[in-house]
Length: 549
Image (cartoon, rainbow, N blue to C red; front, top):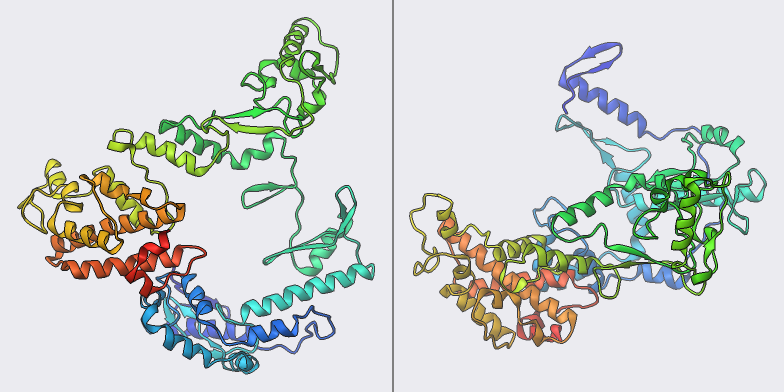
């Protein structure tokens, strides 16, 4: 949104130069050092690191530290305006790493103090007004957005507040609050840039006013979840009802998810007697509504309403009045049903997921079930499970390939798109189908042949499904199978990209260049995403299968 004008000195002004000047004066005043009193932290006893830890901080960076830092950055991010983003450093790390490490060693930790002073004295900022920057001005206090000093200053200030608050408690200036069965005193809690100070109710408003902050009450919402609420009350879960709605979407795909969890009884602790579906697949309050109206504690747990086991199990009721008439009939029926639900104090209540043989829920298993339903008409029920070693775009490509959703010429022709030809743009020898462009096409076949030779694999499949399934049985470990699966899918992705270059720009790479592009991509994506393994570029080129053992 553009700033059309500003009201300053009692006058409305739309002159761009005057607006810039007013903005500079406003922020220059904010960032000018003030002579007013500032709290001193000099006398506070900060915790200190050991001499050994200090030496480690001042030691030159090693190659692994630099690579780890680069790997954690997004490829589209750039450390400076020179046009080289982090993707460049990742892709050509094997070439530039020696020079880069030497440059980093030119900035030893012993110059830390001087670097801080330099940053402090040279800091200047400008204000962006409607996309146009103002003249720069020096900063007398504070730091700029993204300033490398900012995290360190924050830690100093946050730890200073922690120390000051602890001193105030020791001097009896305030006492904090007692929580838990052991009456543990909690004066304050700090997490990231959030601070909670616990004081007595009568002191809350006064302290909040002095600190210039807001105050609230418990329960409250944090990241959409209730904090400090009784979670066995159904209303406490209303903020996250969207999770249940998401379950119904899974149901619509053919997997009965929302009703796939059942309660397995143990000691009855933590299970709501009236509000959970633990008996007969329904909530007790719905089945025995008249009895529920007589209950004195609607949030009672199962352990509070059942005594005994098996045929000896009976209710331990707390009615507002004795049941009569139809209500008495409900009570007799409920007592009969309780005979099958005795408590077992040797185990805890658990939830069983009936869609898994072991009764354990996992996202991976649910993904498999969804794959089987979504792709049930596809030959082989190919699993398109999430593979975190490759970018999302490759997974999307694989889905489209398996579902025959790639815009090859024969598919476009079926949809009435007017094309000058439906033959393969690469080889021009056959109709361009999904199967043809990924496997039988001569260029694609030559690439696959080189890939199998590179990995020392004998491929005996005949179809695209066999190809993309990826002979994972040749690798015993799960990590090895995932690496080879990644290599397999990226190869298909590279072949498809080359096809698009030919179809739209009349450009395509020869097989040797395609192979080089493929090897760089697999090394880049896998080495940056795999955990606990350092992949060497030279070894990757010469014998990649050693990483899949």
